[in-house]
Image (tube, rainbow, N blue to C red; front, side):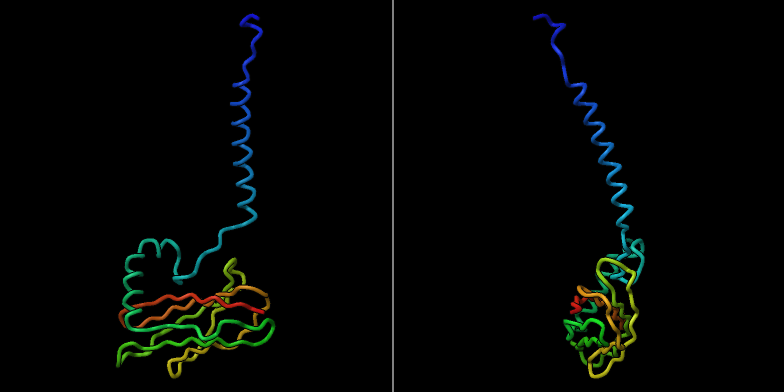
Length: 161
């Protein structure tokens, strides 16, 4: 056999690899257009602000946790019926003022069903206004509590059945 009759297939391999990479890039773009990134509202701020202030946020959270203990008393909610959520906010130190609060009811996979909830605070229990979930599955309560010097953020999972 002569050297001229030997065939090399490596140029075809390189070409196929380049084509495969291009196809993978196109597939990634098409898939990402169908599944947009949702904003995470855990800190009730835009991502960029949280990113720049994360050390201060963590310091405030630690300070808030020294003063208050927060626990969700409600674990499940009933589908297509009025529900209220109770959250116990225990003061660890005497003479603390009641914290200010913001409450958001949301689905973990989308912001389409977000509901800002009003609530009342009495006897260390924060009770939300009535709401009616219309989708089965996971829901989240995102809670922002603030006193004069610190802020705490909490997320509680609920299951609608």
